[in-house]
Amino acid sequence: MAAAVPVAVAALLATAGPAAAGPVHGGPAAHRATAGAPGAGDPYFPLAGNGGYHVSHYGLTLRYDPRTRHLDGTAVLTARATQALSRFDLDLKGLKVTAVTVDHAKAGYRRAGQELVVTPRTALRKGHDFRVTVTYSGTPEPATDPDGSADGWIPTDDGAFVAGEPQGAMTWFPANNHPLDKASYDFTLTVPRGDTAVANGVFLGSRTAGARTTFRWRQSEPMAAYLATATVGRFQVQQYTTRDGVKVYNAVDPREAKAAAPVLKQLPSVLEWESRLFGPYPFRAAGAIVDHAPGVGYALETQSRPLYDSAPDLATLVHESAHQWFGDSVSLTRWQDIWLNEGFATYAEWLWTEQHGGSSAQQEFDALYARPASDGLWAFAPGDPGSGANIFATPVYARGAMTLHELRKAVGDPAFFRVLRAWASAHRDGHGTTAQFIALAERISGRNLDGLFHTWLLTGGKPAAP
Ligand code: TRP
Ligand code: ZN
Image 1: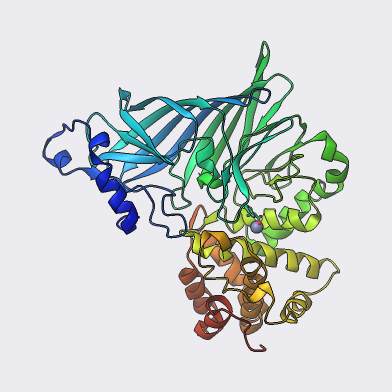
Image 2: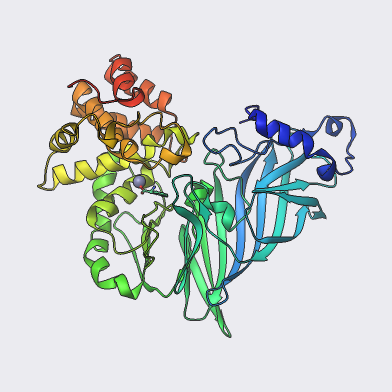
């Protein structure tokens, strides 16, 4: 990602010059070095992510005390410069930065809103692999999304509910905070003894020393920053390995345990059923975090281990599990394409019901289609929500799923399910765009589907009867 720096941001950059400029040594290649862009070029969230480098790994060492709400963090990012860089940005909101090094040398830094502007002592050559260490601390605070919901580090009565979609990762660690840039993660999380800290991926073990316990986690498959979690609380823990060799770790707030138990028991069969439909489960770890976080109002498909604000119902478990294929393993390149996540996860719920003795997807479709043209369902086209304020609105979920149902009717079940599996496998651990999805559906079905997608995905208002 490069060039697409919005005009306002470019202007901001120009005026930001003097404070940020540091001495730049490093010879002829480096003297053409320029500043990395402050955003990844996503019009919905112009400052999300950054230009000029890619991160391959985050090593996050955090210590959190739920009683004081104080966080101490060290983030070590392994990255590669994609241009000659005089300086670059990370995304970090709030907290206090106390030191930044680049390749072990002290670097200059300053804060500008959600941008942490880092000026290495010497410019970085294009292609150079470098390591950034940021030491920080403070009281993390949630971010408020354009739709008014909170995300990021959300304190609870016994810890923190940590959910980063779409913006919240920057409330607790410095990141290249856009799904375009995926990386592996190691987490070392220290909390008061008796509390549990749960992150993504495989649980590597815990150690108690004195009044504190440290939990280690490894997410080895690439992950977008918004899918990272480090949720803290009093949890009942359950661990087992599935028949497919997936390591399951569930953490459940005791207040939710009774309601959660019958649903969590179905996790292995849900993952098996989805593996049959969508192809092999994409990660080596799985599980659930069931928190007691009244007021949050949503669940999140945190990678390998979805995060629920209360005991989920089965439909929600199916939904967040389906995201492991659609949204997590296959990531967005821009937030406008959010229907590739939410439309697919919603359609998975319809398929589950259809194949387990409930209403058919056609019946779900018909019930939605019966809504009058004035209904919010038709407020905008799911493939074009228009702004970050609409990315979690009904058209994205429901009409996104209706679009997939239209596709299924047009190409027939065998081709439709081949498309879903091919999508998950071709883009596994990577990214996919709406245009690529349409092209894949056309290739597999041998049909021209432009009209269908144009009508259902890209045109506002209620489509004429199908
Ligand atoms: N992606 C989540 C889901 O549908 C929902 C979600 C995440 C959300 N963050 C949000 C909804 C913020 C509203 C606001 O599984
Ligand atoms: Zn979802």
